[in-house]
Amino acid sequence: MENDIAVKIILNVVETTEPTWRQYGIYWSDIDYLFIQRGYEQGGFNTSKFSKLLEEKNIFSINKLGGILEHFKFDKKYKRDFAGNPENQFYQDLKKGKAGDTGRRFYKVVENFKGHRGYAYYQLLWRMLVCCNYLKTNYNGNFSNFLTTKYSEFKNKEITENEFMNISLSEWESFKKTKPWDKLYGIGENVFDFLIGDLIDEDGRSIEFAKNSYKLDDSNIRFLKATGICKNPEHDIVTTYLKDLNLPYTIREINKGIYSYCSKTALNEVEEGVYIGDPGNHGFCYLHRCSECKVYEICEKNFD
Image (cartoon, rainbow, N blue to C red; front, side, top):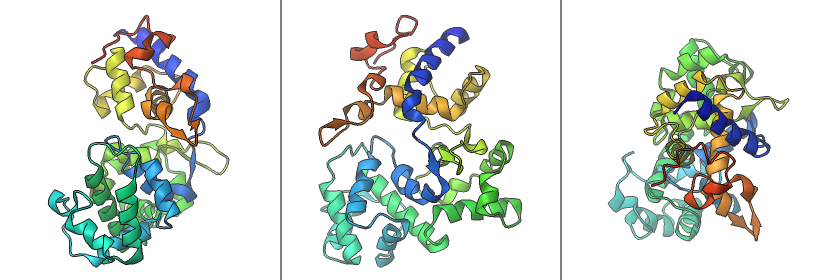
């Protein structure tokens, strides 16, 4: 696809959804909350709804979830026959109280969750528990502490939270080359970027080092393939291509815009009879909505 056509398609998406994605900002004080809510939002698993149930059960914290596995001798690797459904030993032990009241409550949430589970629900839950246990054991149950500690080790000096929030984009890119996410079970570069991508300062301004954050989620993949902008999307190839277009938005803003435009979940998600988000801005890059898109005539319309 020619660059000028790609620019028109992307600008339509980002400009149309701007009122939506401008609301995604996250303060540093919420980063631990975000770790649970977003860290395992993979494979179609609706962690936002799952997190609300954890909150209702008063077990929504890295420390509480991380404490569950302290009652077990476990290998980090997910074993389907051990934790692959509520009838397996792990969940039955939780049900019987082996991990106390927190374990019983977690079992109830897992068993009764009616939101989008995706294709790897139990595997993602296991990874979440293992990772929360790791953060509880090594970083006081704080993802924020993990970030500042890892960056301090990288710089070979103690870095405060305020200093961390003000590091440059080039420093962040150098830090990422050390793969700081390696010990976070189930978290790769794609998700690690996503976790810090919406950080804002006290004045509501986006953090400089996060402006190139990009999560190649299902919505972004569908958009890139359907439009014909990129038929075989890979993280680094996509981000390099978007940078070369010199659009008046950051990579993260484009990323959020595409997600908002193409998220079928956001279109269909209903709470108490009220649609979340504006249905006019969501659910595109599906055949049944194609003709409603302002740029459908210049799109390649590569639908499966």
